[in-house]
Amino acid sequence: MGGGNLKIYDRQSDVTSFYNCASIVVCLTNPLLAVETFGLTTLEAMSTGLPVIVPTQGGIAEMVEDGRNGYKINVQQLIVIEQCIQKILENRMLYSRLSENALKSSARFDNRHTLLRLIDILNL
Image 1 (tube, rainbow, N blue to C red):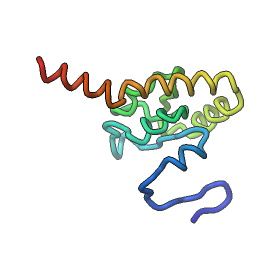
Image 2: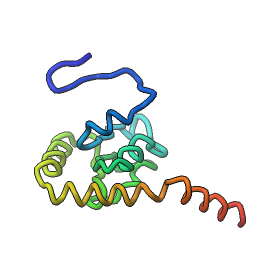
Image 3: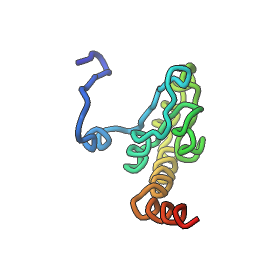
């Protein structure tokens, strides 16, 4: 479904192929309508080395360090989002830095780190 440069897919059970074909992931959840409390899609994207653009509010924004592993932009500012996407995709050094930092940041949520944090919390 879709047209031009937009394709819409049904819910997928395996999203790996989508991340492998993507260059960047943009989350446009409007915090006035819904708040992304964790942002699994964003974390999955970062774990594959994809730079992300997320809203400025919610748990999803806590995963992103603006300008380090992605960007936090008000979802109402579509022109700013468009400009940011162009900047990331046109600057290979910036893209590589964001990608590398996205991978590093996502490692904080791997099984080992998560288990160690849970053990630490439960030992309090």
